[in-house]
Structure formats: structure tokens, C-alpha cells
Image 1: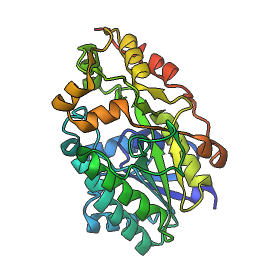
Image 2: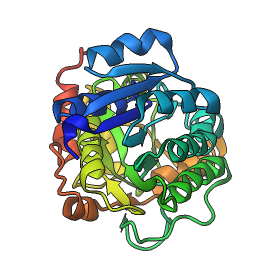
Image 3: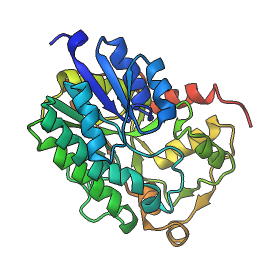
Length: 323
């Protein structure tokens, strides 16, 4: 099927990945429609070159009507509610809406896609703390997930597991899952204004030995990989979409602070952090594992334009106003 005749519906079209993804799909020649639940954001989608569709991703009737109207060949599930999420101490509360979109929202999209005969659904997942906190620091898609995550992470872990299993076991539509790394981009992810302010005020401490491993991905690279998954991804597969340089917290956090013109992060013993912030924050800073992008590079023929968070962070920080 020619790109000009292939219709792609992006659910969550105005989110961190949604916006660059819509732009990338339009530039690649696809006919694109973008779903938003906020009427005021329809103009954003229109300016990106796509057809705006108003629907609440948790309302089955609205989603079905949107899918029936657009009749897409492919649906991309980018629905989350992560904007401004910086309160890791209350992780469960901060991610409650995203968890609902990953569970009920995924079920709604899959059901609508089946009724409309959609061929493929590509869904957003996460690469990082869901992996088992044992063994090698860099995990592949074949490695096991954490069977006993900290209690505060359990709802999010269960939601991610539900999304992944529901998607990759679907044959109609055929499903693909993309495990994105921690996002960054202008005013996005670790460069959200609230996060930048917290780091500049030394409110994000280096906990314990800072040995936790993180993977990052620029939102433009996440979008480019998603286009590749639409074109080349194998049904029933999961792909880590991360840059080439996983890093420990004790490496990337002080470097980010330096780039933002801040003092080095304060150090906080793990036992104090556990008391003040919880086991889950300590785990994320000292125990979690990162992901390898080898499979995505090989099978999707994807190469990140920002292969290292170091230069990516530096490029964005250089454009920020000073303190």
C-alpha cells in the first residue's frame, strides 16, 4: 500500500511523542488523523498537517466513532497523562490517569480497531524500571521483568504489563509494543520546566550510590522509531526505543545539573531517602536497569539522531534561559 493512501490514526496526538510523530508521518507521506480529548488542541493537530478528531480515549463509543470515521490502516497508541509529572514520591497518584489509559484505554482502542478492520496497532510502553533489578545492567527485550516491584510502582507495572500483553497477543489488529526510554526534548521529560526548576534548586538529590541505570530517548527519535515500527515492525514483537548510551544516575544527574547551571545535587543516604520518599524512589535511583536498542537498530533499521543523552541534553540546555 502506498503511503499516500495509508491512513494512520494517532491517539494522543498532542503529547510528548504525539506531536513529533504526527509531523514525521505527514512528512513521510502518510494521511494522518490525530485524536485529542481537548477541543482547544484541535488547532495544534491541524497545524501539524493532520486531521483533528475529538474523542475521550476512555469512552468506548467516542473512540469507536472516531475509528469508524477515519477508517485507519494503523492506529498508534500514545495516550498518557505525563505532563508536569515530577512528584515521584507519590508515584501511584501521579501516574493514575496514565495507568487507566494503558489498561482500559488500550482495551477500548483494540476493540474499536477490531470492529473497524484496522490492520496494525503500535502501542507506547516504557523501558527502564519494569525490568528485573538483578543481573546485567543493560537488558534486552528477552530479559525478564521485575516480578516484585516496590509497592508504589505496582499499579504502573501492572498497567504496563496489561498494555504489552494485550497488544502483542492481538492478531486482529496485529500488535507491536515500543518501550521508550525516559523522554527528553524542549520543555519535555527531564526538561519539563518544573523538573528544571527542581534541579536548579537542588531538590533532586543523588540517593545512595546512584547506581541505578537509566535509558533516555529524544522525543524526535521516539517518533522516528515509531514510523519505522509502522513500516517494518514484526507483529507480536516488543522493541526498546532508547539511545546508545545507558547511564547511571550518579553520572547523568550531576551532568544535567551542570548543564543547567546548578550546583551539584545534594547527596542523601539511601536509608534516609527510603524514609522520606519511599522504597520505589530509592530503587529508581540505585537499582533499576536500562535497555539495549540493538533489536530496534537491526530489525527496524532505526538509528537515533541523538545517539547520546550527553549531547542531546547539552543542545537543549544551551537554549534555555539562565537562572
